[in-house]
Image (cartoon, rainbow, N blue to C red; front, top):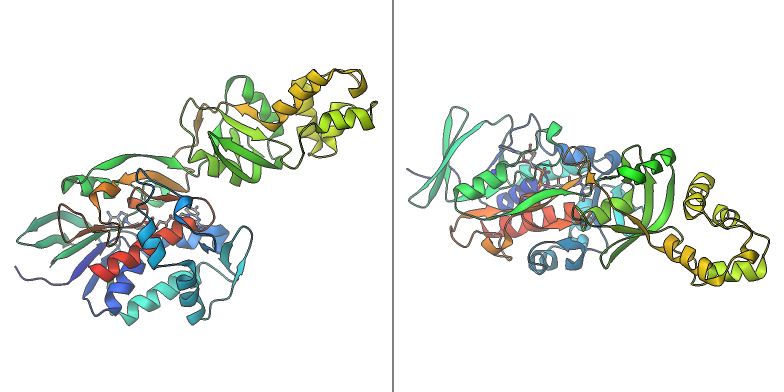
Length: 391
Ligand code: FDA
């Protein structure tokens, strides 16, 4: 059998498109196979339609993986500035929203069009609605049936993402393929996902729709962003971030007053002895939230009549309010998947499988998961470029 292409990439999402463009522009004959009717569907819905395409603060510490160092090499070789240069070369206007998060001024469609244009420059053969049959590997070539064609190439790139948002067609296909070729998979679970509350804590449902600027903690990891009460539990950026560090059975802590210095209630007792906890909280938080917290702490009466010990205990609780989520909203609502194809199987420089040269895995399919805020697309770009330069 002779090769029809140099590289076959399965999945025309963020990572697959970037990999295809990079390899194509190097003169490689690239076939990019996509099951959906068009490429880059998750890019199109990302960032509220404006695609949070990277983050100025990308660094390896912003990624979770069984090997915390794995992402280092690819991220060092393809930086946010590199992606911004590409965006600017294509005349796409952008802005920083907050915390280094970069968005298109216009629409996420511009990012997909940019990547398709780059693929065009590399003469990438993109085929959508591709139903891929069995994939075989023999004599150094990967071969598969795509529709009525049999195609084969010495390099195969797995770029089919993770199972988050199944209603968009997301599945664990990447893991099945990896296992077929003997690669290990780190148990996947939903990440950047709202958490659900039950039992006594379900009483917080009365606060549905209320959000506050908090500091959320899981273990020693903290995120200072907004949290939102929902009819099922907790959401908002601070909770989505912390969900990636949370395991079932763990408690998370919420600091509802992250700007308040220690002993602030004692200071309030001294300066306003006739004030109440509820009044103090109302000055800093949405009133319904303030009242709900004050009611649960149940410090009756004026601050001047309460002991310092009681006030310190209240402060402590407000600064690290424990919630024990009974679960998460699962893949249906998870922005990404944690876990995936084990990094121990891959070269961190090229994303190539150590056991099977010619096989590559990139993007969300791999056990590298970023924080909320453009970090996951940046991993897709960086890992896509790493494989595109090597395959
Ligand atoms: P991705 O899922 O993008 O692409 C995989 C591709 O493979 C898809 O096109 C799929 O159809 C295709 N495929 C799957 N199985 C196949 C098969 N058997 N045969 C052929 N093709 C197959 N991140 C970020 O950094 N900034 C943001 O603003 C957002 N916003 C956001 C919003 C929402 C609602 C979600 C769900 C996610 C985000 N993300 C994000 C996360 C981001 O979308 C995600 O990290 C990347 O899309 C991952 O890129 P991949 O290319 O790895 O997978």
